[in-house]
Image (cartoon, rainbow, N blue to C red; front, side, top):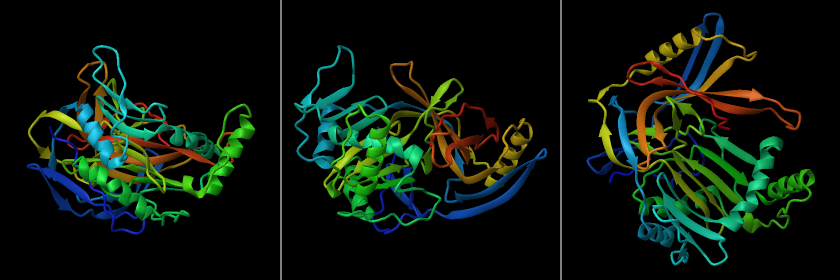
Length: 381
């Protein structure tokens, strides 16, 4: 079995654009330092102006091809060994009996407050009772604002929480990746939650939904970092599609997310980022240079009919794998297509929202053929 290779650097004190990049070659990880570059261009798309004020990573392979793969299913023993590293003491969780023929693994404690498991395309463990308390505060923050959140192209320092800092959070999750033979770079998205914000958002939720049970006794022990961590396969990052549909298949939200408190990892979840039985669909071919990808993108935009009153500003362009899955098959198969991803924000304002929020949209240009790949948008923010 080949698994996606990730690496987590614990040497950086701040959340920056200096994330490492790795290529899987003959079963070993080779270091390739990321080279971030600014890209500024203005595209006149048949009278509609699109501005590119973006970052891109130019430390990428020169060739690639399309792949097919199958999801890898972690065994019960593998899940227990993961727990021994990521949530020590929970490796003795009881196995939940599942319907006959179900290949998934599910482990719980007696109170069902701690669970772990695997199924095709997913591997996770969570202190569920603790983690779910945060969900309503986080949902409320979507409409009223956060204490801190940061996308990777924003070079911001992550704040220090009362009992631990961002660097400690990274070091806590590192043994999990090392155990799983994953190699990761800096998280692509970070939230920091201090006790004041947890209290504020919980009260706002309770005001809106007074019948709901809401945690209001937050302490410094409850503060946490939420991280989204990109996954690389053969030197190219897996795209996080989040509910998009392409070619009749679901675009996978491929990657890892976790919640880390001062005491432990509350949540670890890896989705659609570990593969087996990979097969190349063609011989390796040259990757379309970025300038040519931008030109093809402009040609596509010129053929569109625009109804947006605000100009598009592309703020990130990355070479990524578009991971598509056909969930109707028992094998949970994947198609992996190399694409240039053009990221831009579409802002919106609703009456109940105190500030302008946005959806993060992504347009795909095939990284070999240069064709635009149509898809339906999900709400990815």
